[in-house]
Length: 313
Image (cartoon, rainbow, N blue to C red; front, side, top):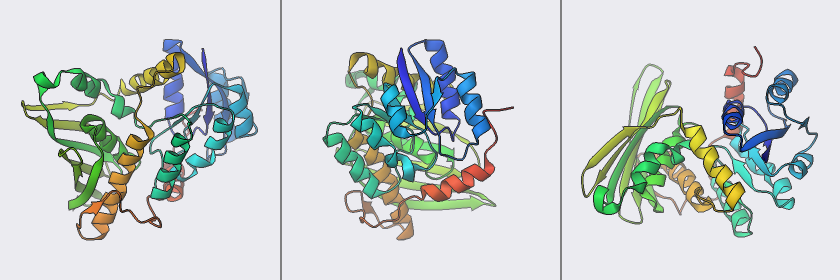
């Protein structure tokens, strides 16, 4: 049985993941370290409901007693402050989406990976059954991908990263540049559109809706035809967790590489800069080191203020 140590239970994922894992009997949450916004009674309820062994006093203590760390706080700017203890203990980590939010942390992640540390992530939608099934089809049958269009809605980055990772998972090439295209709005609801060019010649566009949940829908245009599907969000957690468990049991990693994960972040960073530059295309390899990125602390403040108590009745 794979033993998971979770850092922070801010979002719903720890609860949902733990429920899925109980059905599969391959892994379980064994311990928690929490310094996020969830109160002690919610942490205690999580420990009780999923039969965790302990609430740890430090990340180091947590890392020593588990097989893998799950970093699941909602403030992506703090994610990398937790990983060192796991790396020192020679343990892999899964970092929930968005994995990081600025170019400096992207480069730190890449450096950690080059040192041999195992980093798994990030959006469960990248591993969806719909995307996996499409990629399993022979190119001779479904054609070479020329363009992918994707949509999703809740917010720009925390949820928007889902569709960008999905697009990258399909195209499987490094991005060259992102361009902000247009924005439309009605009251408090907005829709922003971006275009991406990839090294292999493929292109993509994505639309981010803010103010209302929207499904993740993908349209793929290939040399053989056009394919479309809505990603079934009820199955994506299992798809992700199966890949993590497969790695832990076999050592064979079918999750995205760190460079693939950070490329998705770079696409969105370049898109934000393009918007601020009135639609000037921004190369993903020319994002300034001092770019502010997406503010994880600000997101955490808003998320915590609106969050329901999900671990207790």
